[in-house]
Length: 267
Image (cartoon, rainbow, N blue to C red; front, side, top):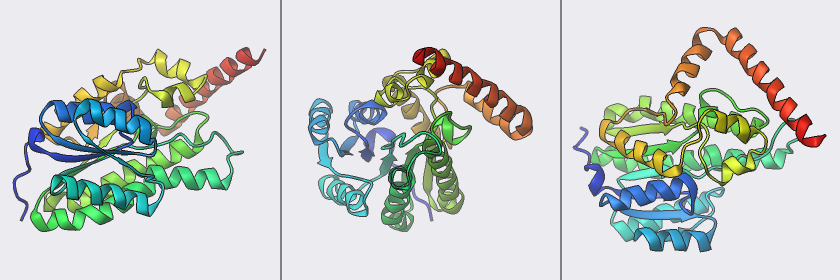
């Protein structure tokens, strides 16, 4: 039978992609509220600085690999005595259009999807046995809608949301809380990598990582499945489901605007 979840301030948490951006902000928010935090990232130097600032513990790891996922989980379990909440935050854009090679598709899939699967496989059986656990996936509004000029990102973020939904359906009655964080533009290095697309995202109101972390903290108290830092995403998601043809036509117009921005920049 499910048992009582630890209150958010008492969580023992592991945050992947914790060197900067949303991951570092979530880790800092958790630590400031009293949670014990371990952060992982492939960028060991930035990770160490982040862990030092928030009073957490750094574990350099490459979650694109099975060993990297398990390294973070093993280190956090040893350091904290267990893991109550796993924040599957690490992600990459990983390519643009049809020219993206298979190798880049594979890397993007490994980080944006398989890392979540591998972590869940390692954690959830034990959580079910004790009756509680929390798995929070940082997906994207792209996982509910789409994203221009980023086919691997759009596809894998859809898969990340689908996997989170499947986990919630399968294990929600067994005491496992699963949540999917789906922001639109957030002022991180990933937004900078979006190039001209960032101009469209900022138009819709890019948020800071700290603002996103505050909303995640709120959601830890009510266990909502979708965490939407940009409220309009819910309207877009609803429109996409109820009139898909109109939605696609609107996205095609947005694609035209994006193409015009690229042409202007190149002229």
